[in-house]
Image 1: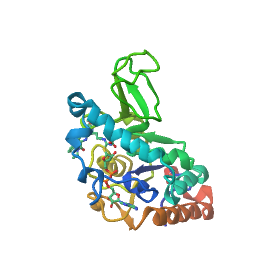
Image 2 (image 1 turned 180 degrees about the horizontal axis):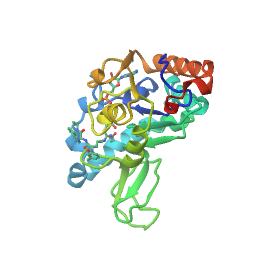
Image 3 (image 1 turned 120 degrees about the vertical axis):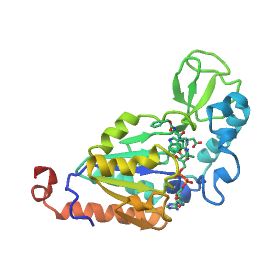
Length: 255
Ligand code: BV8
């Protein structure tokens, strides 16, 4: 384990669809991924929603129903990150590109859904955001303003600004360790976070993935295999390293 990480170092974690694969949810770019079945332009852009909202509702209704189906639950990788948040002496922020609720169900709390949440709905008429654990359609009525026909799933489509970018960039600029898990590194601005952590904070950067991602060369280190195996092992080693090292001796910031 990396001896330079201060015992109370600040950690930022980025997760992608790969961490939820072993929970039974599809990824996007793998051979049997979502984008092998539907085109981004038809279901995940504001233009697609304007053109054919029923098609977009159908796409997200199917993914929402899959998430709420029995048998879909957090796996050891999700649980290991919740444990890290609970036991690591320093700050831990978990930024996910995933719109599922498996991190919350595993117990993570310091969590940012930068691409939104499929179990939430937003009214385009009054901008109210609220829980929406059911199908959505053009007839759906906003619980806030009562208007029908303006509800949309509370996710970030291509061409839209991701959520909480200031909080994310703020944490990246002062982190000591950046860990990227289960993401191909093909979608921005998330794919640029490794450089942000590396160059604005001088952080150590590690990717944990089934295979080398598009940005693998940008990381100081990489561990490869199924998330449910490599993430718990990495978290165990990290916590172990914190427990053996007395607080006083480590803090780089003292220098
Ligand atoms: C924006 C929500 C302005 C909806 C999603 C710069 C250059 C080029 C293009 C752009 C650029 N800047 C912006 C763009 C445009 C665009 C973009 O990046 N296009 C791509 C296609 C090139 N970006 C945007 O439009 C973004 N908005 O830029 O606004 C702006 C600019 C600057 C600063 C602020 C704002 C908005 C993008 C968000 C779109 N919404 N999701 C929904 O889910 O339906 S993106 C969606 O796809 C996911 O959220 C995720 O972000 C992305 C998919 O990536 P992954 O999660 O990584 O999944 P993938 O399948 O690709 O990979 C899975 C990985 O897991 C693989 O590596 C695999 O090996 C691994 N794996 C598989 N199984 C396992 C595993 N690992 C471990 N264990 C396993 N078992």
